[in-house]
Length: 246
Image 1 (tube, rainbow, N blue to C red):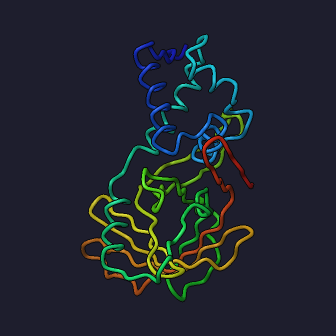
Image 2 (tube, rainbow, N blue to C red):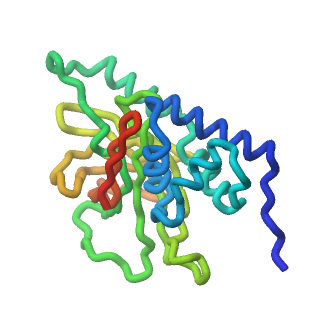
Image 3 (spheres, rainbow, N blue to C red):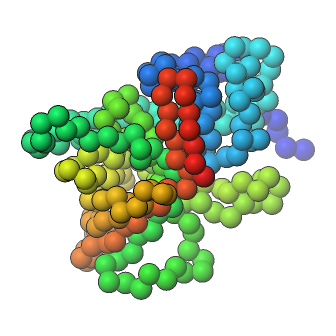
């Protein structure tokens, strides 16, 4: 018989207060906006992350199932404040001169994306056993920049309720870098990648551009990669308001 997952009241209160803090730090968003953002980040459906259950948990009413509380905890782990996005964005902002009254808006790009990366000039065909790769762009405490979360989506496991198994492979920053370009940067585990992206379509949002990445020792660097991002779940939020597109 498998061991039961038990989250004690102290941990539940910590998660509850962290969720409330997240709401305050991101413009005092309402519970529906929080739920919509959690669905997008975790890649789950409405019935897998109930608004009423979330609201009861935030109020401390009843005892929310441990499995659901683990989901809230995973969300908090993925959106934890990351200074990299703010630091990189501020550095670029200090050295780039923009036209008067121009402020790049990153809010329309918040969402979950399918991601394709191919070596420049390579065949665009996808290998049969190649896992689906994706990217999540979610707000930081500074509305001018977004945090990026890279992931691999594997086929749902038997008994998992049809949910894909997500493997989160790193995080970074999505910051304005020019009039209509954005820099997607990631640095982790002794390597880094940088992509300069331009929006090419708006319904759904598609971003395309060129990426360079560090090479491993003993491996010659490639000339570059072509990156394409297609939004599959977008979220636009303000205090007490949400909108989504799937």
